[in-house]
Image 1 (tube, one colour):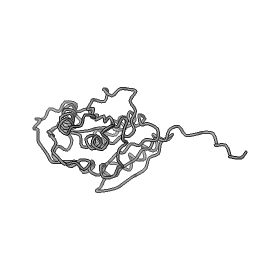
Image 2 (tube, one colour):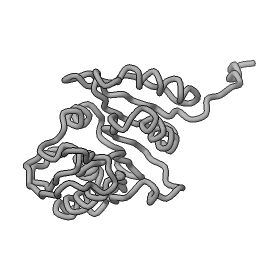
Image 3 (tube, one colour):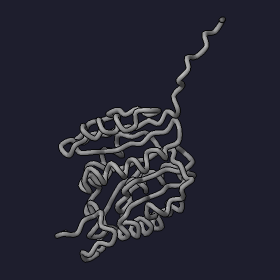
Image 4 (cartoon, helix red, strand yellow):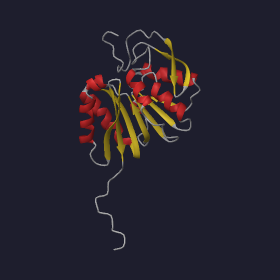
Length: 215
């Protein structure tokens, strides 16, 4: 890919469309991928771990795939929750075009593939699923999570997959320190060198003691 990166807004590399076989949410078929996007030749190992170690998505509401690439997470969630609205968000315009193409081919009309600023400000999410772009750098990554995790609905979860040797444990510590009121951060799974982190939004915690029944 040379100096081009999958997190470039407009990749300069040759597109080189290709077809690959996939199985998503129990459904097998082909998708279109291209150069200049993340993992164009197969479902990335971290994404596979995330898909295998998260519960079924909520059946309705707004669901977010953050850093969607060509769309394996967004498509899986859309298949599993056909009555939900799935937001596939990425800065890479080529990736978004691929998600739209793949969603249309698979008959998934509940997927919105958009740039981050195109998600309406009043939309909150019943779940976030993400294989986040670790290689953008710590500051960019933290800013990304600080922007989107607060948009979780109460009693909802974000699920993040991070390679262990790329800082999953330090990210877990940062998440715990940064979201220390009304949230909990746990390690939900470890597989194939990846950690799946779960961020639960509990809502505002009570600061006053509950009354004792019978007083």
